[in-house]
Length: 244
Image (cartoon, rainbow, N blue to C red; front, side, top):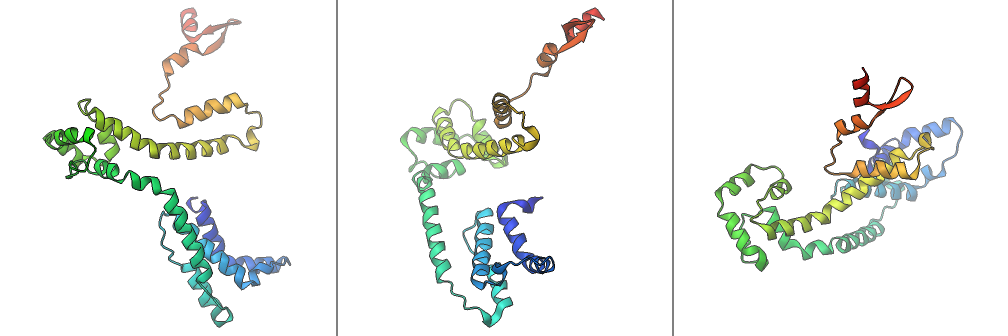
C-alpha cells in the first residue's frame, strides 16, 4: 500500500495513537512514552517533517502538532523555538545539498525552454545552435507538442552536437540518483530469507537486468540455446524440430 512509505507510516502511527494506547492497556503493557507530552510533541514534529520531505515541500504545515495541542489544551507548555532551530538546520543542509544546482541554473533554464530568449546569456558554444533551433519552425512545433522535454532533446538532430552533449551532461546529474535508488530496492526485493541460496553472481545479473534502461531480450536466440531432453540426448530446440 502507498502509505507504507516512511513518512506515511509515521503519520498512520500518529493518527492511531489513541487506539494503540487503549490496546496496550488492554494487554497490560506499559508505554510510558504515551504519557510523556514532550515525547509526543517530538513525535508530532517528526511526523510533519517526514510528510513534507516526502512531497518535496519544505513548508511545515503542522497538522499533527496542531491536533496535539488542541487535544492536550492547557496541560502542555508548547514552545516552538526548539523546532524552529531544527528546521533552520534542515534548511541549511538543503542549501548545501543543492548548492551545485545553483551553479548550473543558466543551463537548466536553457533546456527547460530552449526557445526563450537565453541566447545572450548562453555559453558561446551553444549560442549559434540555439539561434538555429529557434529559427526552426518544425522543432518549435515539436517542442510545443511534446510532454517530455528530455524526449525532445534525445531526438534532436545531429546538427546540434553541442546542445546534445550539454544535455547529456545535465541529465547525468539526475539519472544516477534514480538508478541507485532502484538498485537498492531491487536488491532488497531479491535478497530475502526466501532466497537464501541466491549467489552473488546471480544477484549481480539480476541487478544489471533490473537497472538497464533500454535492454530488450533476444527471445529467439534464448529459445535456440535452450536445451531439451530428446531421446536421451541433449538437443537444441532447433535440433528437436529436425528430429520430429
